Image (cartoon, rainbow, N blue to C red; front, side, top):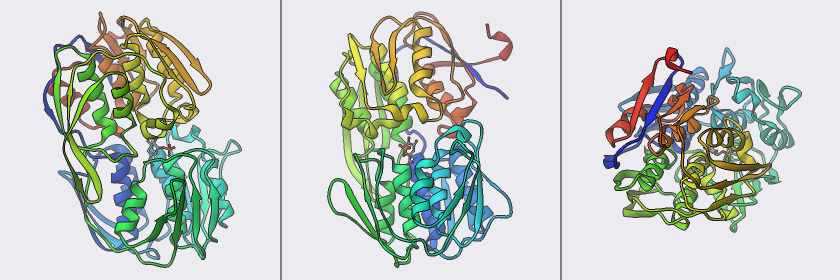
Length: 441
Ligand code: S3P
């Protein structure tokens, strides 16, 4: 069923919320659990379609995985040599993380795997993993455009690798680390800018010989078996982002977001919002299973436009749709550059957000690697999510701030990352209604 929402002006956001588990950590907990020795128990797992695609792919390769049930998952690890060739293609739906990380893992297996995805995933660039994995000795077939379906003809052992990533990408870095685990030599990666480091934290906690040489260089020495370790998945800051921005923008709001992951490689959103004038406090900072966690208290504050520092771009890469809404409601101009990566996410987020904001009366100037947004009054209207979960959630928040309701079409993909989004939104005071298709203009 195609789902459309109508979002209307809301009073202040109040109360407490625990958003669902972190998507990046949930994927990695499954993959590393599968190739560890012993049983991995996960709590707080994200029961979204993307992570279920990873679970199903691992099951198809012979790994016993129970759950999720109330966020609990148990995996009987098969070790680095225990995965079996799947009988059919592995369908990874909308999930770029599943496809790129599994391509890396499967490149080092002595069998062939076929990886497929939905229309959006089949348009996303895979050359970025194919090129370095080919250098390691795998043979990967893709379309002429370098997109899925991928046929990964693995090789065991792969050769080690020295590689400078052309773009800051945690998916590419993680794919190469997974490939490097069973390689014959060491894998040395140079990152242009830091990106999320969940894979490194989890690999080290399981006994991998992985060291950071300096801010840019990372080296993995193969040969050590991984030992299972429990995972407590924190709330996903990328999901909390919608409520952080909503509470900041709606006058009179005060919201407490509990147990949010605040790994410093993920908190670019908080840094950028603070530069714009937001009032966000981190309460009770603590560590859970090797990941920093805190409760976030967010109070309404007027925002002003800024030049977004390029160093923060990879640290907020998934939060730009909602940050663009924050910029649209801020006083003055916000400029973003060095963010061309946004054009190859679940949708072209520069183009799709520019269209959506323009439809609501905001002056925007998209550029090849960024955007200029002029803050101003938000009008009502109809916006297409282009099947992008984060665009759909962003415009669901926009209706709370606009003079007239905002209709958002094609909201089904919200299930990929944030099951229960509409209930969470309702619980803190946002006015979000399911709209019958017949009601669309
Ligand atoms: C992710 C990394 C980021 C991010 C994606 C999840 C991950 O992608 O956009 O949603 O879990 O490693 P890139 O590595 O392409 O920047």
